[in-house]
Amino acid sequence: IKCLIHNLIHSAVQKEREQLFLEDAEYDYVEGLKNSIDNGIDIDCVNEEGNSALIIAASHGNKKSVSLLIKSKCSKNIKSNISLHFGN
Image (cartoon, rainbow, N blue to C red; front, side, top):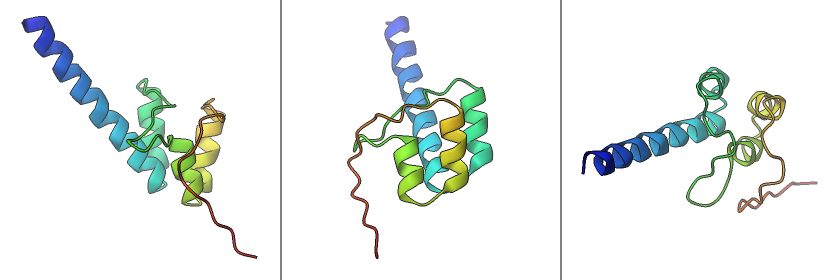
């Protein structure tokens, strides 16, 4: 039972770290992204909609976050569920 409880807690903590990482991408908080990457976050984690930090940062026009994520070797092949609309 102790092992099960430990695994549940670890999983919850990991999900919270990933959520904060994805929020950092959304709000262009580059220092938060760097900290998470340096501490071993799964750089290709996705939210409930299946969107990665790269997709989220790009959809918000966060160039600094996009640059950091690409330099940090995130996958550029994760399919997005976000619709991007560009005006002419």
